[in-house]
Length: 87
Image (cartoon, rainbow, N blue to C red; front, side, top):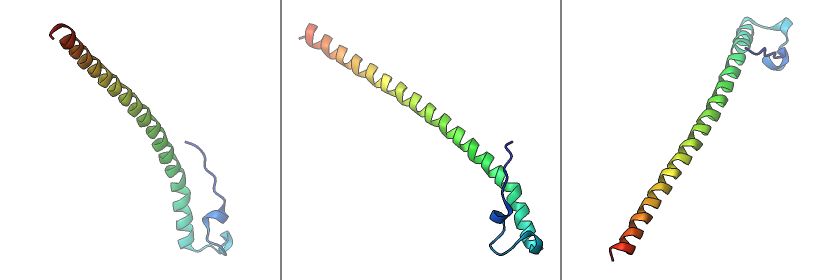
């Protein structure tokens, strides 16, 4: 897990400093300090999964285009045989 440091000036609303923090502010700070790294980790996982799905989608698209090309070639071959030998 990556270390994620957040300065207190970002965590506290303007005008509140650590020496004048209220218990509600401390709960808020604790909540943010605990969950910012977790959210960062989830965002990283989503990014990796998105890249994986993008790669899988491009592979699937290539396979489907190959199948379409093969089907078109077979249709062309059938038409060619029909036109050349059956007419």
